[in-house]
Image 1 (cartoon, rainbow, N blue to C red):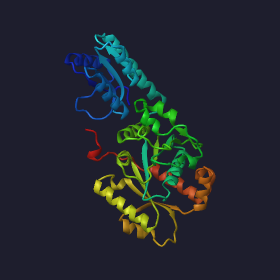
Image 2 (image 1 turned 90 degrees about the horizontal axis):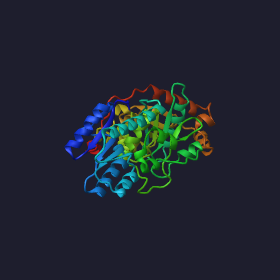
Image 3 (image 1 turned 135 degrees about the vertical axis):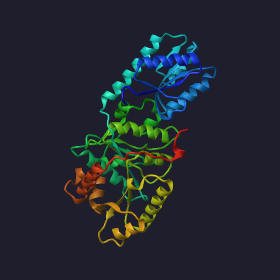
Length: 385
């Protein structure tokens, strides 16, 4: 984010104290004070503790956990050491015991701004594209498409950085496709959402030989590592500014997290095969998107994987049934694809001269030339109130 647009939310009960903080923030410059009805993420929350300390700490902890706020400063007339320790435990960067001097507050705000600017300086700020890939049903090759598209994008000279996220909630296979042994997965983010920034993310991503930065799914799920729509939104907004392309292996589910990803995505690649069950499911998904009013139909691209020219169902038949043009076809080269998978290699590394590999390179060219969507619309029931 720009240095002069750090958002601050004030949760201060005393009108006099609130006015004092507003005056200091305006004089410090570089800060945007959010109004009481403002929605969206806050870089900093300044919170005055009252009499219900335990409840207030829990409230702030929840905001940090879901990513509603980045950092928190506490203000309190409590001088109890136990209160201070509790504030430190939930991640408070500053604790102002009243009365406090203006210079102490200004110094803390300066240090906060320097932390944010330092993080921004570690990675060039981008406006990357998010490509979400989902399958019409299980087994259509969604992960194959996601992995090989990401690697093909990373190998383009005009693309500097690509991330690949595995959103299969159980037993994601991306590490097997790329023969990597990641130390971390996106459950680390759900457990440390208050620390999420460019630097933290760079430290937990695994890097493939092609340069693709991989964020795998957890090997098991528990209450502690479940993602939420709010967490996913914050993650993708950070990744969008870090990477030219963020490729998401979205699997087949359509829960609240998947809908949030669809809301934030620039392109949806809907993968299908030329079989009746796959096309039937594809048709149901297209009708579902139409009924929801999202994503826009121009953002949905149909991809036929394992395409055979002499298939019983032709491309024309599929387009007539689906009432939508097929955007891309990937030829059926099962032997090459499965051997590459078994060896933990992307197609460009295992079979660089094969037709299927060149097909993915051309698909990457198409994604590079696709314009970013200008307006993001979502469903009202997913928005925070």
